[in-house]
Image: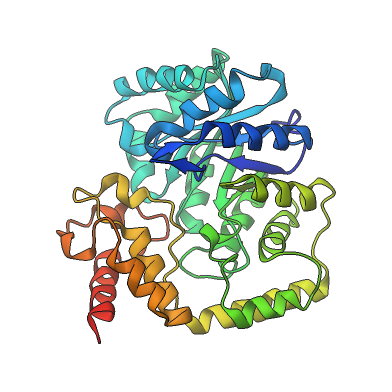
Length: 367
């Protein structure tokens, strides 16, 4: 089984690290890595574009150069925006190995697969190239990360049964969401017998920064933080082998390792509380942006889309001066949008970003 060397069912997503003046704070990241490993966890997940390329380099500085290779499991990805033809893939892969300071990746995922991306990967023979790298020992296990409807996932797993693991967005807010289809995608993975890796268990922080009435429900349980309930929800399903968290400070690492070290599935009372929280969130009509920032990787104007949406959600939740203040200070506002649509193609949540930017601009323009 491809997870035989993974010690526990909780992994470190290396895409939201602590930054200082735009650079990864490596001293802080080293402390986070040390605690994570000392608590018995060993799975790290990155991609070439995370943190504008800093994620891989930070892993080399803070993990792979400081610990022997058998102390950690390292996952990397082949991202759509970094290759245009088959001949681009091998040089990119070798650069990823070099950036991370390793000779092989334990897992290598075809990144952000959806109907459109899958067609490009097939045309470029990306899966075949990855399988060749696996035969050479440079990839131990081949997988995909996925953002689309369940029918597309079923097609991919049918066409490429060599896929060993699937990473999907899975959390209690998206479980029955028709735009994400978390439950249906999970069921497709089970049908094909593929272990599941969970990304976005706290929905980019949305399930941590809850509206007051939702947080009050979870506080009434007196058993943990909003993050703990969200992560435990995701980890409690059969076949889910790994739950990732994009941790950005040591406190998050300490807290998450604490409740995942001796993992306990949610009780019926806790599950019922999450259903109540879902009802509250649905009535808020918040923008379901997870701040993955894939949109900004392709935006020609570098519009601060996740920050703009975060301000709008804060306005809906609290309606205080803070949201307007932060909105006025976003790096590049919605007025810079040229409506090219590249952001919508890249968005894993399939958000109508151009229309939403217009609506946000109008909302903040109102006096």
